[in-house]
Image 1 (tube, rainbow, N blue to C red):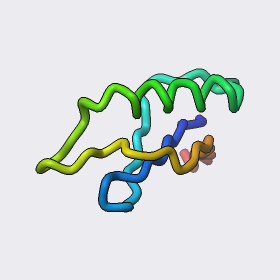
Image 2: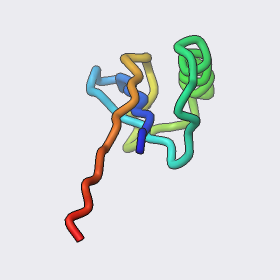
Image 3: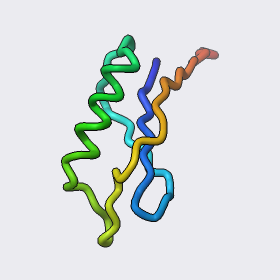
Length: 70
């Protein structure tokens, strides 16, 4: 299973990950960057007065491989 990890920097320069519950596994860099820019531009996400999605840092797919034993 692949998960999409979107990493932003908050106003304090600390990393903040957003991991959508449902995401296509074949998105292009342009599609992901556009979505991240739209989230950043909404300017509605904050925690304790600190804006969470101030700058875009990175995006990646993380693949988890499960090997059942029984």
